[in-house]
Image 1: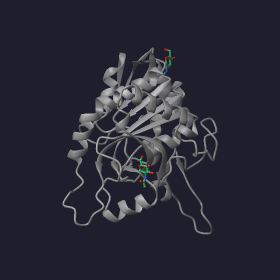
Image 2: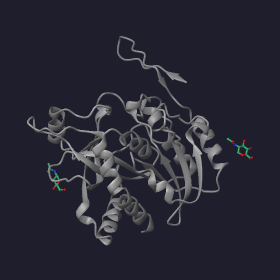
Image 3: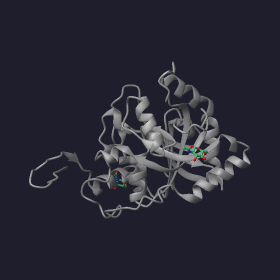
Image 4: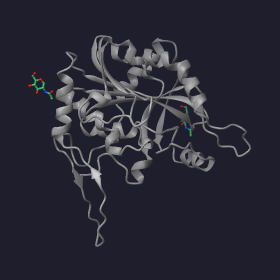
Length: 295
Ligand SMILES: *[C@@H]1O[C@H](CO)[C@@H](O)[C@H](O)[C@H]1NC(C)=O
Ligand SMILES: *[C@@H]1O[C@H](CO)[C@@H](O)[C@H](O)[C@H]1NC(C)=O
């Protein structure tokens, strides 16, 4: 279904492809027909953090390409899947492989799964990502609880809630000052303390950029001035849609690299460094998420 937006005296036609409520419902119903799991928690696994899905018990795996209306991966070799199962006694659904705006998906498509999750009965969304550290006091390998976000694509008109509002999901103008659930953040902190890993823990503001290029030095300095502690290319669209439909959100960033802010530096941002750090910390992050679910 296509929508048109009229602005002022001149007519600007923006082609959005809006998904109707019935289509989300059809996807949700189709999924419920294929598993006995009734998830109350959804986990979106960030780059290299998909291992959590392997911990699910009695799991049922469904490829994105098999799910009606579901976005399919445009990238060769990135076959994403939903894994349903039980994690420390809770019925969960895990997204192994998320959709990124920089892959060419619309901002609406990126967050499509979250509305499906809400129709499945999910009440809590846990999002993880790999992010670059902007805050000088962060180290590579730190785990940052997301306290708040800065929606840079939103400043440029890319918000997944743009378009006709579907009241059955939520209100036209949803509040975002409480986007990241305080109680869940405290639970993560207590879990880290109990596990003796609180020294890896940070809390801060996540800033989303569209990507796929990493930031310039001037951009990093700008983001630091704006009060961002970490920067990445995901998470915010899913969180906006989750809050719109009333899900509680816990967001966690793994600081996989530190951004470069010195013109004399010989270092370069590289994806290999990100993957290496992710590999080293992925188990700890999984343990922390399980710890939160246990409380
Ligand atoms: C789900 O299963 C029911 C009962 O078998 C069937 O009537 C319905 O069409 C199915 N829904 C979808 C979307 O597959
Ligand atoms: C960086 O992180 C530290 C420790 O979490 C925090 O106290 C500080 O406010 C953050 N921001 C800046 C700009 O240093």
